[in-house]
Image 1 (cartoon, rainbow, N blue to C red):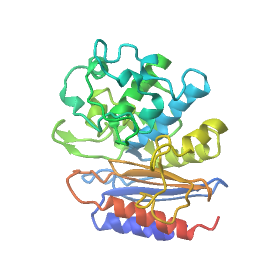
Image 2 (image 1 turned 180 degrees about the vertical axis):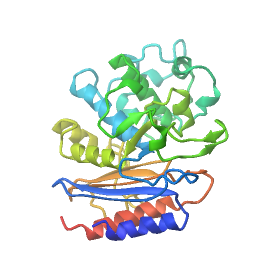
Image 3 (image 1 turned 120 degrees about the horizontal axis):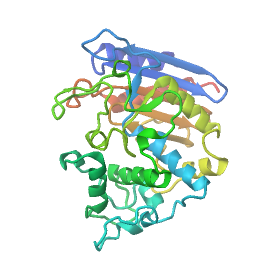
Image 4 (image 1 turned 60 degrees about the horizontal axis):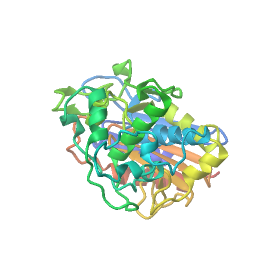
Length: 334
């Protein structure tokens, strides 16, 4: 089922559009197929393999923050419609701001009115100080209900998780094949030659704001291998990660093309045009992506480091994802 899709990915690597990629498919019946191409680092001979760690970027949102938030709900420690002030009472202290009344659900679905991004890493300070600045900053809020894809919202969700659990995100237990702040940089696919840090990044998070927050944040920071991502996707779809009720809530349409953190299949969807209407997907800036087709019973992932050695080049990643998704769906015989 991966033969045609693998050929498309291999051509993208051999043409120089992306330096390396790991492609895989897993079915609920246990079928597993993987194919890897290219190098971890363009200046080194190490090949991409199924256990190579990729900077998952915004896949952190759906593989870490969303399920962690739903576990709080399962445990009765939070409700999706609780306001932020329940968990972060010092939020916007002494400010006439509506932000403390915005809910976990609104943050999870990008409908809290928060801005998309802010150069937090330029604010300075150690991670604990930066976190307090984020809580005290007077954020310019838009209307509730309007979808604005927001890293800021997920950074705040990460702070909620830390507050309720009483521990830093970097110390949370993670499934096999995942980590924050990898201990073996050489096992990772390199990302950008970063002018801010003055080096090619390998084994440290590409996202500047996550790096400034200590390498683990609600919006980015998670590293994962193809093997790990596929195993987790299979477990999630089988109902082994969340309860049946929580999984149903995660999948339920919330606003526009969004479910709880995930995008629903729609025209122009990153997973292509041939997936079932019961498909969820999400992508990461570094070139990663994961799609879950609940109707047909399979998940597929395409992990690349298309930002290596620079984000300022056209990799064709959007077209590549759709082409791969369509060929997989067309070949599926489940």
